[in-house]
Length: 489
Image 1 (tube, rainbow, N blue to C red):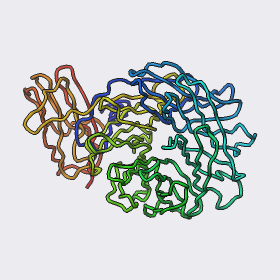
Image 2: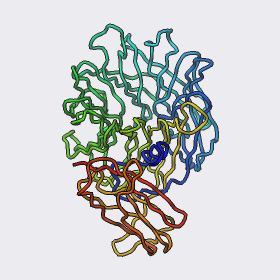
Image 3: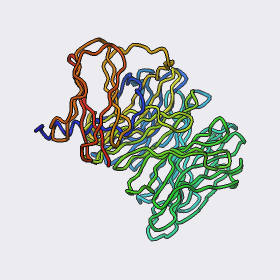
Image 4: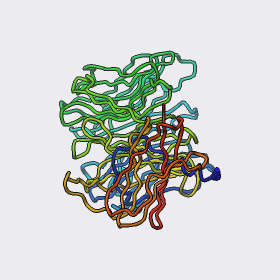
């Protein structure tokens, strides 16, 4: 029998499902100290580097500050800035502006002593992170939050979030908020929208017609909630709204307008049979009519927090994948084609909580993602920046010889009763692939022979086995890799 620690390490290899080889991780970087730091948003800058926002928290001071990190193209820190006072502040979005500086959308609690007294906060800096102006906004007389701020074609900014958040004893408080300001942060207009008991905007974009589209969530009462899509004109007046979802809690966290004028949204789908969350990808036309939806995940809560349109017409997503055994989240990156079908996925993490918050395709065709790790770093939560290469395109009759050993995730997974296991070999060598149960007992030997350089696969038939988790492991030269698969009858 294998030790419990060996089994726990095996669980860390869980991926559901994977359809192709993910690109290599080129590098990762950690930012933070012994307290808590979080990266919530990023943007590739004109010099090829990256700008990151989030927060840094000091336990000794009891203080939460908005944090801005500028890196070069390899993730090495160029400079950092903190903004705040003795209360709490955090950044939710960041973009580089036309003057080379940055606009950050966030929230601050600096205008009152109550934890409920929050306000939307926009902060404009120069290219070195020095503040040019900042402004807070509060017209509802109730606590407000800003989740996202974006540049607009007139040189100003549009922000979304929530008004009336967490008001004690206030039933029905909490609505989606949209805020338009000029280039100097002066408010032009502010609109509030409600549909249900509680509503919130998470992501806003200016649309091709000059108006705005916002995605978020709407609590419909009881145990129900819907992903809510709101379209407005240039003045913030409602053009149309749509709700999507089932009988559970569903929500959208980011939206992008696609080349066809429609929209791609990512979030969480809580209307599953098991009542766990699945990562949810939803594509609509320009009127919000559903073209297709896809869910990704297994047992446990899996969520998507960010989506970007890729140069090949597909989508790149990041969020979290939860182990249904350990109950911990891992940083999850998924690449799909134009129809939402998964092309590959990649899970990164350790023995604690890790998750992705924001992702973009980079100018070199690869991907950059930021999030949080509790598994690595100096302690507590740290900002985690991950750079992936681009996925090579191979024709049907031409394949690049592999340069390293890799064991791929089986497909399909979960499966019944058979599944395919694929791997690649950079050199000819004697290779074995064996299957074990979770106690380490050997179930089957699928490969035990001299294997040529190249890409290979083998079928595993589990017709005579009961449902459950099984482990498969490859040994080749000094290379050993293990992954998990799930048989469901």
